[in-house]
Amino acid sequence: MSYVRACAVSDVEDEGALAVEIDGESIAVVRSDGEFFAIRDECSHATVPLSEGDVEDCTIECWLHGSRFDLRSGKPTGLPATKPVPVYPVRVDGDDVLVSLTTNQEFPQ
Ligand code: FES
Image (cartoon, rainbow, N blue to C red; front, side):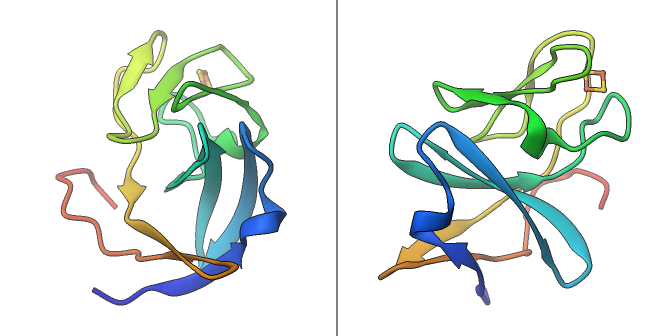
């Protein structure tokens, strides 16, 4: 599994998100409870960026209609969204946040 640098650790506040682009894919790098997550930066309900939503307790809330997604699984935990959003493996190496675009989830890419 190959990882690419997404951003610096210090670029993302705790309970915050940062929009990045990796290989043409829009990704939200999210930090919650001190842990990093990566999720496709597009709500599954409509085409708006999740990175502009609120982060709390390992979930991100879409700013448009309030759907919430679990950052560990990408699954919606609040309506109106019913479809999951792909999430990606993340690791921290020193001051770098690395993301792998490989996902073994059964979501459409
Ligand atoms: S666009 Fe995200 S909940 Fe509607």
